[in-house]
Image (cartoon, rainbow, N blue to C red; front, side, top):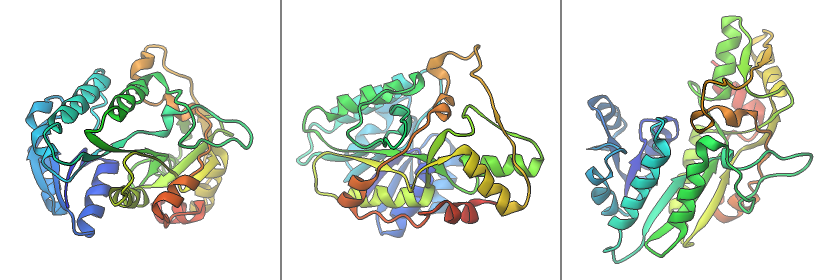
Length: 294
């Protein structure tokens, strides 16, 4: 299988590229710099020069592949516009294919609201995105129309690796002897997923024959920030203080990328597990903290 990947050097994309290669896929990944190209080639992937901002430079190549995994994002002020235009261009480029293009689009849990009590977010929960990621909900609706694309939308929980995500950031604060500053309160619930476990779900999703799917991706359904900090403290034998900070009033809501950390969420992955057979290795918080805490 030939798979085109955007965002192949990012937290999610790099893990997905490596997982695809380990399963025998041929990976062509978008690269906007020589540094990105070198990193992708080191993984064993082919680097295709181009930029998300200029969809015409790469959508033709992407549409010629068996599947596309979209994990790229610019995190610029016009990120929503770039994402929407690139996906519309990709959809247009698939019109002459004999078979619909398999597209995995990366959404996120911040497209969904906070929950209370025993409530949990599922693939049927209506969108209520934070402003900075509202564009994703609109793009997903657009991609869902028509038969040009065989669309799978994956909504990852907070993604954790040794270098990125809440566990790495908490560990860094603890070792620096400073409080962990976050938009969340101590009792805010965060769903978590380890990056390689998430990548395994992307590969499983590629194998599904269903025409249109939505998959929730969380191996820790929801843990309070206080309990997560306690696990990390116990792991290192040092206390970690949580400091809740307010939104910076100088930052417009449309570019407030960290607003979602204030959401208290719990994720139900029953349908994901049933549909794909996904079995994440880091299924307990102890597994995740021991594996990822440096």
